[in-house]
Amino acid sequence: MIADYKILSFVDALALLNHLLNLVAPAWGVGALLAVALAWRARARQPFWRGWWGHCVWLGLAGSAVLAAALPWLGRDGRMVTYAVLVVVLGGVAAWRDARRA
Image 1 (cartoon, rainbow, N blue to C red):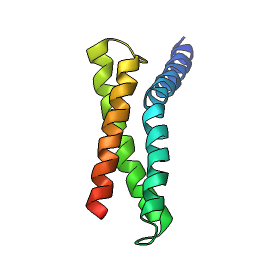
Image 2 (cartoon, rainbow, N blue to C red):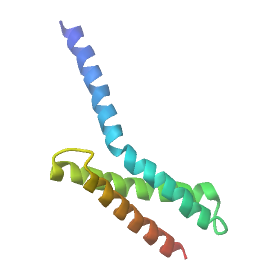
Image 3 (tube, rainbow, N blue to C red):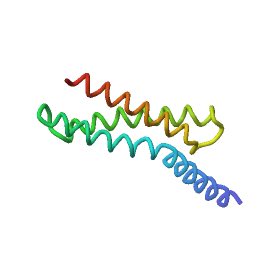
Image 4 (cartoon, rainbow, N blue to C red):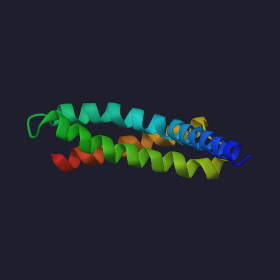
């Protein structure tokens, strides 16, 4: 009986991890695409991979914060207003990162 409980808790932990990764996947996906554009613009000042990595982390964290804040506020994931706010916030962070480098 104890062994069955451990297997179920392991599966529940994997399901929780799957749900959390799927929650933040849009933020990191859009952030990675924006990071490619920002790193491409700054390629003369620093190596592409270094610029991409820094932009990707900042954009991914900002997008994850937006999605995590919208979840309790709206009651569920996947609302269009959440994704609209995500695009606006990531655009603002990308513009801030680009202006800071110029």
